[in-house]
Amino acid sequence: MVNRMRHNRSQRGSTRSHHALKGIALTKCPDCNNPVMRHQACSNCGKYRGKVIINLEKKAKVTKKATKKTEKKA
Image (spheres, one colour):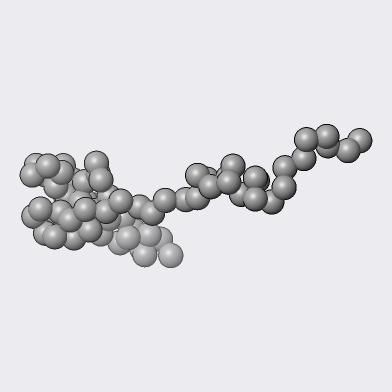
């Protein structure tokens, strides 16, 4: 069966004009000036809105212990 009301290329393109992907909106961290995604804690200093949310020193110790355990097993 043939489409009765077929859209040509220009109509199809204008319909899909708003389907393009948008870039990631980045802002600068006020403390360390690294690029940060909006509404997320900074991965460099661990702060969000001036407060420490992620304790990076503690996180580094935990990962160090985990890697030592896996090296001993291997």
